Length: 377
Image 1 (cartoon, helix red, strand yellow):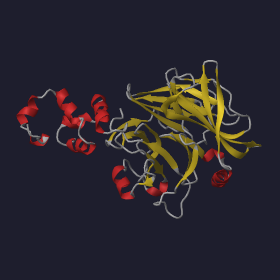
Image 2 (tube, one colour):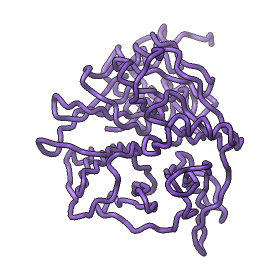
Image 3 (cartoon, rainbow, N blue to C red):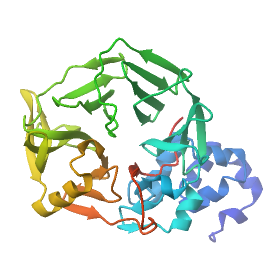
Image 4 (tube, rainbow, N blue to C red):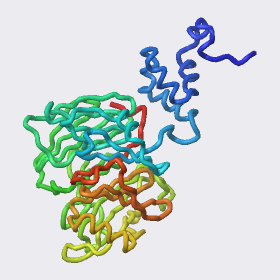
């Protein structure tokens, strides 16, 4: 039997195939073909939001776990809401014109606040709402503010296979939106816990959001199910901290007892009298007999001097996040990223974006962007 192009096959044969078999055949197509087929009928358009189909597609489409590159996305007021992308796999900046065609989701008054598993959350103050969007599939949902007027200090987007949550910290209250119920819940009666000038989001693991408070530094967590703050489960690695941030890996890693878990790290400036003299990285070892922080790396002196010159000892401008095996350390007032590659135990500076104007102001926000066709609403 001669090989035949599927598009030239007799339509009567296609029409008699069971839908499950037809979807299975399409799972072998390259990504570009699937995106092209979206415009031909409603069923093909719906496939990219079908978890069962996408699990087959990811299995057969390539040897890697994802058919997409991963990016570091830069948000800054001077970019007029076109977001430069740095390809962290190839180590290159994406062409600005290509980035514009992919990302331009909202009006000039919007601002990007949070990202999680391929979803982004924008603040739309004029319409009193948040926009949660999948930039790759160009799908989105509008979430109205929980009350009017509404102000807040910290927002964190949490994406999961079943939908997403929006965590908002506002003084003594917490607001939590759940897309599965399409409604807000309010939890209050707390004493102020977090500093509203810190640019660090919460980091998610196993139903909890983790934060580090201002001095005296301690790890606290918010139970997203019960709606309450939890006491710190372990002391900080040292009492000589000038600032501290917490990061949790996206990937599960081998633990000391043979199990797998998402690792927790603390990045801290070590010094006295509120002045940092060095930057250290600790990993939390969680064992049955107890948890303890273990120092795994110290930033080389020359790189540390550059970091201090960048933030001018204004440590509240420093924030950190995890991105594909990298611990990224950013400053609100500086356009570069200091990152630590965990697998190689090496430090690097990411080069400045070539599209950045020669004169720029504060307001740099970096986000981890791993495009996903299926990111559930």
